[in-house]
Length: 147
Image (cartoon, rainbow, N blue to C red):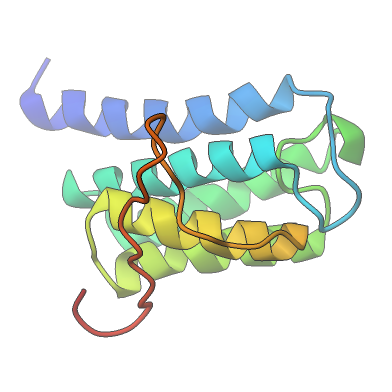
């Protein structure tokens, strides 16, 4: 298998695995209010989107696939869906994925920005995440310009 084909398969595997993991989750928050678990998994998805971008997946290809996936998950009741329980969730996740391409920061910076925004949607304070030792991690916040 060519290196390009292998990278393409890896990119799609990352994106689809993030989506499919959530489809199996039944613990769902109310409409447009993600759970902490969904925010963490969503931040993984966004970091993987940045990795896919870095590996060569074009914006149009990635975002088009997301839109197709949104259509697909409409076949499932909201309580069985991962993250995109309603139109507001779709708009939020798509906006964050677009940001990955509009502002190509590194995957961990995109993860942090997403996690902060998701926690704000939860109504939770978006203080800097901490590591197990309790030390504050990066407080990267910008959505525009260079980090």
